[in-house]
Length: 391
Image (cartoon, rainbow, N blue to C red; front, top):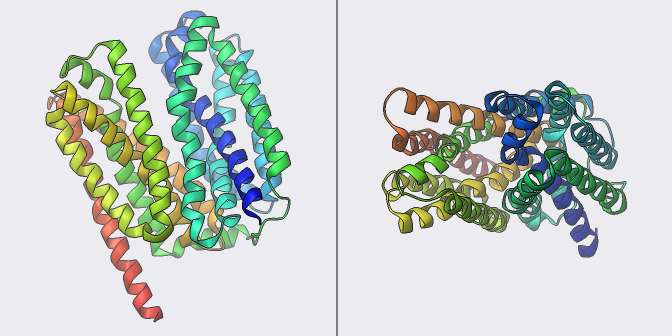
């Protein structure tokens, strides 16, 4: 695999992940428009987000298990075509039911596509560049929050939410073309039976990575879900200023993803543990810095940087731990990310409802992430012991 070919493989995967990420997150920005147009309430429209998340969490392992024997290129191209057609259905939806079906359909391939893209990126990259390759793919997701979602939201409010989905459809067509041209038909990948893929979960490292994902990432969303009302209530930011701060969070996320990928090439486990420790400390500090506009702005950037730095680190670790049967493990980890989102948001909400107050969601997030820190140190010790035994 030449360096040039590898570059175009990563570009094709990056564009695909950017497109899927935009489709996933942009719905939050156009919910009011959808609710008005379809004559439904905002909470009802919000079920489109819930439906998508459940589709990813449930569909990823099932779809991955059903397609484990297919060519990686055929899977990527086929999934992207399916995703694109699902967005066509969304664009022509005339009621809530049809739009929900379209969202669930597109969510079913989400986790498996990310898993296969992660494996292809790692298998087509040099051994010492696998972390960077996986981070490049993950960066497509973070860039979608920085660029794709704001633009999609603007388009949806200006020309209708259907136009947003037509734009995503066009991006999907571009992604299909890029995948067809640049993904090699033959990839250095040994296809495994479902039994072999399931056998990977006997490895304690995989279980520990999944636990780190659920808790380490879950703590993020206990705080992030309520970041806008916190910044408005405690720091006194206007709605326009909060939009800018979320953009700053997105920039931090993108830079954190890229930086973590580079560090993962040589110092994967230490970087993961240190990142989670820093993330926990930042969530604790946010409890106080959220009351000052300058310090809150700095903390928001640092929060985004450390939060999304965990994604390529965890995906790289699970792919390396699963060795020759990584696809199902990577897909289950994607499900774990979505489960973490749901758990974190729920626990953050319960913190507010039980009377602790909105400001305490950051401490709740820190407490959840701290559990991820403990599991990361257990994994770090386990990996060191395994290396000693092999010597």
